[in-house]
Length: 119
Image (cartoon, rainbow, N blue to C red):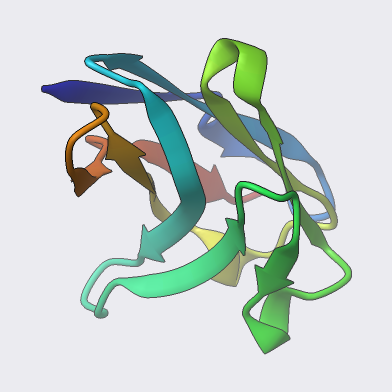
């Protein structure tokens, strides 16, 4: 079993920044891709960004240039640096990662951290 715990959310004014973290723990032999998703009130969950085990990154087109995903494999942690935040970035942000215990791969989700952008 693997647990993902997100942190770093909160209330920020438009134009501000936040850095989200997501730490994985448990039966981890290796971690593959790590991703961030978000879900705004009344909307479907949407993919935000991913970073592969090799460090390659990809972003939702609408977020390129403002959000940066990174990872620290020594700490089994993925980060999301969010700059120039807008009210429409308000959402519950989830991390998701592919892990292996050495015999099989599974995808796990965190519980989410709330980001509210408001003046």
